[in-house]
Length: 186
Image (tube, rainbow, N blue to C red; front, top):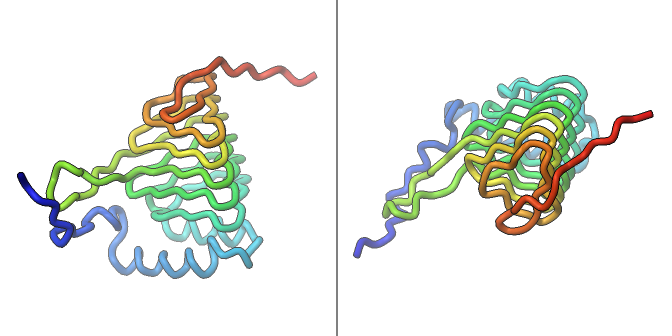
């Protein structure tokens, strides 16, 4: 039987889309300014994310302690909310549509390790969160998952598979529990 050999792990995919210098500079800018709890100024955060390659629409609300691993792998539509302490662990592309809410403590996880390989290299896949979706507090969206239009992932749930449009998901692994209906405003 083969043994795990973490000494052979090279992390080559860590800065995919950026070089070593850009990734290192982002590490410090992110820690000192973007995710810092002392900085309540969303405009500064958005400008820095864009400077490092994020594509961001208008009206982004980005709260404190939001972690974005690789802004060069991030696209965000218009009028989105990123709640306190959410983590976009985007070793691969993350695309967030418009009018999306990513709640407090949510984790969008694009990477994992290939446990069948002794050096456990990254095994990454993109995540797409379509328009009108709501990713609840303390949830996890796993690599390769598509959260379709207006879907909801409820508090504490784990999405391991694609989520259907206009559907509400709950549990670990998340299962569809009902349809989402949005009432017209009068």
